[in-house]
Structure formats: structure tokens, C-alpha cells
Length: 291
Image (cartoon, rainbow, N blue to C red; front, side, top):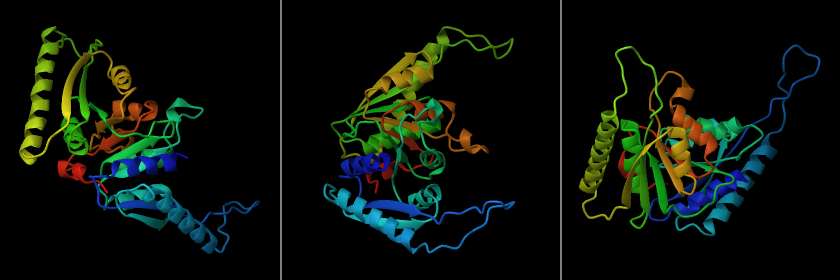
């Protein structure tokens, strides 16, 4: 199942990054409707069986993880729906890992509601593990970079998460699609050169900060890629054989679905590789020890 894939991914990546792994299982009492009435009616039931089943599942999954985990594994049982339970648990975590069911009948439904809610609203970095994605060590990471504070935070997190022998491909896509924005706005060839220079400058800022924060640490190798094309197409292409795709969340916005941004949301629903969404403002030190 997608939940087991997420657990296996977490177990494979917790070494040298965390002190404990929590396996969270949520359960809730179903609401039964009464036929013939104008509104649904709650029917009292003995929910102890549900609680016991959830506890058994949590213990079984924790035991499965403990067989290969380098850190202690704790089973956690929460009463309530999955999304709120995971978001609450994530408040005290350094990395939240959830599974997604893989591509369904509709392309837009690649992510389930639980994984979508967690990626959108979690206050900590959230790893989304598609069911069809290979579970393997993160040796090649791709960071989607657009020059925003969010993307700089994502690169900073990736540097903290990646082992020294890993490679980080930091990719900025310069969208050359003409867009009419006003009579006084024109596309000029020099814009691409200026964007490339800014990209190099901002990436270097992140690297300098990382080296300053960890003067004795050996960082992963970072390759910079400035690509002209459509962001969705190019990012999905370079992420096609990556072990992990890292992107920043927008970090603001009144509408929940707009918090991630259109490109990030599209990638989450289309790329069948493990992905991490990093909220803006996350301390890079968090990446070095996710639990």
C-alpha cells in the first residue's frame, strides 16, 4: 500500500537524520445514516473494536519498520480523521512522511485528499511518496528553483538533508512563453542573461550560508541548471529519474489551494517520484535531523 511505501521510505532515510520514528495511525467512529429521515442520524456503536484494530495496525507497522530502522520506532494511535491527526503530529516532527495512492482514473487525482492536505498545510517539510515511486536512497535530488525565498529555503533544506556523496541538481526554468502584460512591457533577449546571473547569485548565497552554518561539514555537490522552456514540462523531465524532488511552498495566501503555487501543485499530481514540500521559514537545521 502507499502507506507502507511511505513508511519504508522514512525507514530508509532516517539514519543520521533523526532520533526517533513515529508511526501514526488514525481512526474515527463512522456516522451512520438512517434511511427515510430528512437528515443523517448518529447511531451509538461500541467503538472499542475500532480503537483496538487501529492499535494493532500501528503496532504491526511499527514492528515492520523496527526490523530495519536504525532508530527507535514508536507506534502512535490518534482518534480522528487522517489529515488533522497527521498535521497535529507533524507539529512536533521535523519531517512528515505520507503516501499517495498513485495515478488513478483521473490525472488530477494522483494525490489523495490526505496527502494533499498535508502537503498544503503542514508547518514542517512534508515528504510525499507516490505508490508507484521507487523507494531508494536519495542520491540525486532535484530542487525546483525560481529565485523566490521559498525556493531558496527548499535548496537550503536539501543541502541539510542530502548526504555528502549525493548530488543536488538545482534547476531554474526561464519561461520563454510570450505573455502580453501591457503596452509598455516587452520581452528583450538580455532578460534571460540577467535571470541567469541572478540565479547564480542566489544559489551562491544559499551555499555560502550553508557553509557558514556548517563550517566543518561536507556538503553534497550542487549542479546549477538554467533551462529555457515551460516550468512544468522541464521540471517534470529532470525529475523523471531523480530520487527526490524538493520544492518550496508559497507560505502565504488566503486560499488553501494557492499556498503551494500552480507549478508545485501540478508537480505533486504528475511526478511519480518521492517529493518534499518545504514551507517558507523552515530552519535549515531541521533538515539535518528529521524525526
